[in-house]
Amino acid sequence: GFFNYRVTENLRFTNALLYGAGNDRKGLKLNSDLNYRFGDLPRHHSLSLNLGVSIVNESYANSFFGVNEEDSWNSINEEYAAKAGIKDVHVDLNWNYSINSSWLVTSRIRTAKLLGSAKESPLVEKQVGTSASVALAYRF
Image (cartoon, rainbow, N blue to C red; front, side, top):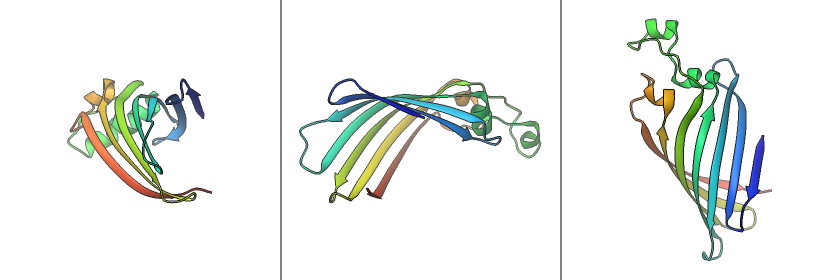
C-alpha cells in the first residue's frame, strides 16, 4: 500500500507499506520519507532529497538479521533473535533526466544507518552503508 501527501509544491510525505518479504513471506516493512524536490532546474532534469525511516515487523527482522538454531550450527554466528522496530534511517539523493516523453535516466545515491536489533545482529559488518543506482526507464 502507498500513501503520499503533498505538503507544499516541493515537499511531499511518502509512505510505502510492503508485505510478503522474508523466509516465511510474512515480513512487513513501512518506509516513510520526507521528500524535497528542488525547483528551478534546467529543462528535463529533476533533483530531490529524501529523509526517511524504515520500520519492520519481527518476521522481517528475523529473516534478514536473525540467526536461527540451524543457521547457527552451520556458521560461526551464535543464535540471534531480531526484534520488530526501526530498522534504519536513510537519506537519498535522486536525479532524473528525461530524454523524451517516454524515456528517462533515473539515479539514486542512498546512505542508511541501521538501528535497533538490526544494528546488533551478528550478520552486520557495517552499521552505515551507501549504495548507488542508475537505470534507464520507459514510461507508458
